[in-house]
Image (cartoon, rainbow, N blue to C red; front, top):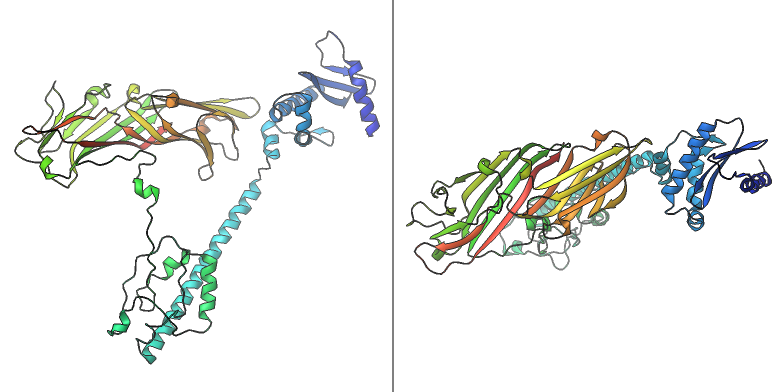
Amino acid sequence: MTRTRIESLLASFPKLIPANTQHTSVETADVRYVYQPLEDLYILLITNKASNILQDIDTLHLFARVVSDICRTADEREILKNAFELLGAFDEVVSMGFRENVNLMQVRSVLEMESHEEKIQEIIARNKEAEAKEELKRRAKQLEMQRREQQRRAAGSGGGSSYLGGGNSGYSPVARFDAPEPPAPITRTTSTPAARAPAFKGTGMKLGGKKTKQAELIDALGGDVLASSITSPDVSAPPTPSVPSHTSPAQKNDGRGSLPEVETESVHIAIKEQISLSLLRDGGVESMELKGDMNLLISDAALAHLRIALSAPSTDFGGNNLQFKQHPNVAKFAPGQERVVALKDPSRAFPVGQSLAVLKWRYAGTDESNVPLSINCWPSPSNDGTCEVSIEYELENENVTLYDVVISIPLPTGSYPTVSSHTGEWSLDPGSHSLAWAVARVSAEDDTRSGSMIFTVGGDDASTFFPVHVTFVGQGSLAGVGVASISKIGGGEAPVFSVDAVVSTEEYLVV
């Protein structure tokens, strides 16, 4: 069909549109026009009269969904702006005049150029790179062993102290690495004072071309191979450079994540709770267990005789199912009275400089009112092979403030989500092929108490999106255990104390 013929058919279409009719197709002697209004424009499909009109209407509806998916509004400016993407999408729907068996999600996947084969090639390339790196490490270690063997032979023939005052000894340590190994114990071959020199200065024995090859390998690998190649307790190994160690944030926080640090006073109380929870997707609790303990650390012996008054819980968490257990030397709670942690023998003192677990508690049950963070995941399959997933959270326990909340939703294999609205941040976890929804802080005092996310993904099996995994760290106590006051036995000024209450998840699921 020539361009002139196409332009002639398009020019005659506005004159053929009937007025005051519900039909969306017009026939002439040669062709059939199937059209659909789209705001001020029309989506038009021109076919011959022998084509299947039902299939033509279905194709036209797919065109309309493609336009709505690519363009924010159906006006002329937006259409012209996305003309290239629209033509590419139309070409995937109709090829050589015939309808392809595709849906909207497949068209979107093609436009995003998601290639399974390409991902496989990237994985293969990364594996090859890792293998090459391991081979370089192996060769570097082999060269290091040869160098040390030659140095031992030279030391045996020319005296063990001649090279200890020397310089490079065929090896120059690279100062680029960040995590140096601690200095290895040095096995000395002589007891002369010269053998105690910790550094190499001046010029000394050189081992031909070995230095050049080894230096090339070390430069190629950076500092990764240094730590593994300078661990042998040999006299030829130069002393490890003194580099100040920097503790990583994860090690520094010791699992605290983004929890604010607490300044430790002379009397410090650490409250730790761990929750295991399994929620049912249709509502209710399958299982729930909360375990907590209180540890007392006293650094001043003058404050070792004291009693701790616990604060009254703001909520009746667990009811009678919340059970407390004291240290054998700590008095039990008196029924109907204020909860006090104190030694049975008032004349005795708590240990100083030693953390002591004075109280433990446990709750196990299925009461939904005790759930600290409710999760509602609602997949809604549609007729076009996609599924819209709405997921929301709400903080139910006002005693805690949660940090680093991550809600992981499994995704169907080979499908990737399109997020339409969300609070917080989201990312894809390629290892588990899941969508990770992250909220930095959830508090009952502001609008972060609840949040939601809506996304669309290919697949119509609602069970694919379960189980949902939740992790967080919290500040406070789910059971409402807190410290109201601390006083000395026998009177006196109340000591200054600090409390660090942390909640973490052992397992938190929606199944």
